Length: 73
Image (cartoon, rainbow, N blue to C red):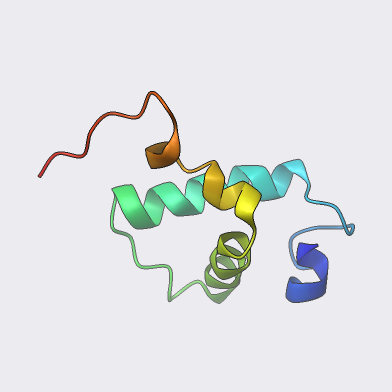
């Protein structure tokens, strides 16, 4: 799936690979938990946008898990 969007920069096939699963979690954690700006890293930024378009990745974010702690401010 992501190959079409990223022209093979990350994935090597039409299927989501383990690299996609790993990167999705790492990019999400960096951006959301640690507030890291990925704009200086255009490939990672493209990956993040592509992952957010797929419901399986969006449904897997930690805050949507049944045992996720309540947000604290």
